[in-house]
Length: 295
Image 1 (cartoon, rainbow, N blue to C red):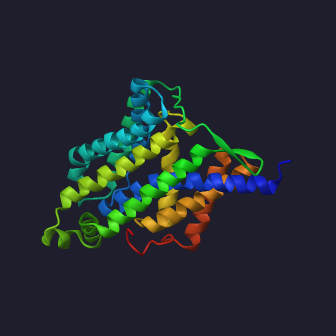
Image 2: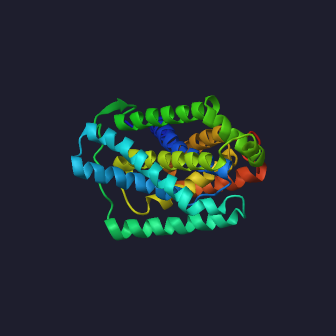
Image 3: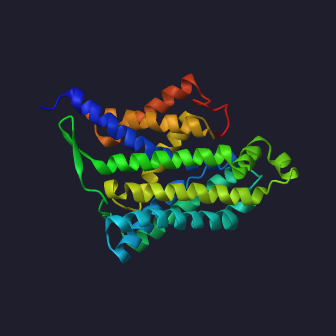
């Protein structure tokens, strides 16, 4: 017989898996914020674009396990290229000015992406078959193996991102720009190229997360709007521009929403996250690691 403790343990594991995916989305959000000082409200639409790109790829080649994992790679590259061109074609002129301008630009882009997706694919969600359909018994439940797989993949990608930021020449340039953009430029750092790399990398991370969760939540034109709210909560709680804080906050929010869903619906669980944000910011307005920089 199912007990409350069994349900709690299962939901905590699900919350861990969801938290890792949320961290993947929020990591890109906080990367753009920390390096370029842009609150990119179009970031959720990169998540949506990755889901649609993967869905179209599977539609062309057939929904098999092998093609799904290829679609994850293709979606990440495709959305990264979109981010690359958007940074040069749209955001480049806003660098160094009023931060309110790129925020408005990103908000407009989000609306454009949503309307393009709605006009192109309709309002009905698209189904993506999971590449792994097996499950394992876990405290009286059949726990999907795919949830475990995406948790591991998300953790691996975040680990690679951390190594990139802390162990590579480009990562050193990124951290130098965060400290002092003008001084970094005087020392020979190619600031515009770093901005392109950061924006493309962040968009690619969101795109990968989109196709990874497509078999769980389906693909729709509103999925970017649904996740950007949670991503923003995570970034604020973790500390504006802190990668470590973002990871910790994502896991906390994932657990909070999972445990709350035992006693209330999914939408109410998101409200619980908002309440948590308000209470937390009254206690620590700078976030968990708001004073420690990107890493």
